[in-house]
Length: 431
Image 1 (cartoon, rainbow, N blue to C red):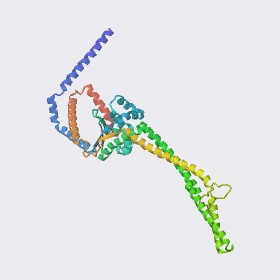
Image 2 (tube, rainbow, N blue to C red):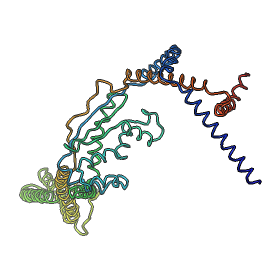
Image 3 (spheres, rainbow, N blue to C red):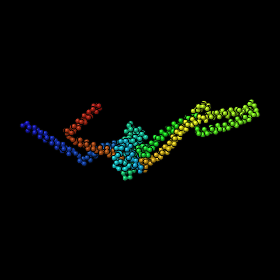
Image 4 (cartoon, rainbow, N blue to C red):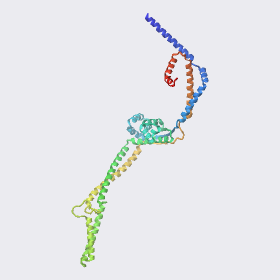
């Protein structure tokens, strides 16, 4: 008995729900306005629609005229033939993230242009362009990452797969800066390619460059030692200096012999107190003094000349000559090595320049004379039409809402939700 009563009650509730649902569907179909009814609503509320469209037009004008002009500068590149042979080495030296992103294109044999596009879009080049133009301040960002993201949004890099030509389009509010940034992309691309190349000529150039620095330091040290030794011992050229001193000593010796012969002849005629005899004796003493100075003191040879002596003696020259020759030989060896390495270094630089992958500029980025945006007329038409359409939808929704019965549970739920949401605002306004 209880089960039958429960089943009857359940079936009655379900029947009531079905009847209520049918009534709601009938009300919805009856309340749904047709085309003539919608046109009548729009005509009656035409002033409202015009006001909405006018407000939308005003907002569109504010948006269009407050938005800064934007300019586009375009440059087109063509990869050089040497790039194909160097692209593998560049790919190997790129950071892991960039290499992984570019490896698929390269292994897919898409050509060197695809790798160029990947390098142009790398974080390394973006960082350098941001730093060169101070784009953090231009874009009003505090982080370098945000500036790079905005630069990426303002730059379009594409490749024509048929011709292989790469197009770089940079958009900016300043036309001069847009052209400069487009050129900077090309400069940074060539610079990065030169830094990342690992060709044999590059390795040779790097080795020679480091070797030249070492040889230059050794040459400077040897030249300094030689100059200090020469300055301390008054030695300019031991070989020539020794020859000159020997010749000078021989000349003095000849004058001394002649003076001694003259003195012997005068002694045969005059006494020792005679003026002529004394004069010759004085000349002989001066010549002997000069010879002694040139020859040096006998006994232990001094390595350094005595105080007040302007030049080393003949006895000191052999000892000084050994040290001078060693220092001079070091200087000449370092000079020869430096000259040879300099020639090889220049040749390596030429070879490296031949192997460095570069691009040829077909179209140089120029300063744009016409703005690329915003399209103010399009903004005005679009926003005005959108406002008019939203106004029409609002009128249809309002008419549909008015035709819903007051006791409809959906309307009651919406009214309760609106009342709950607006309750705090009403309490503040005192309504």
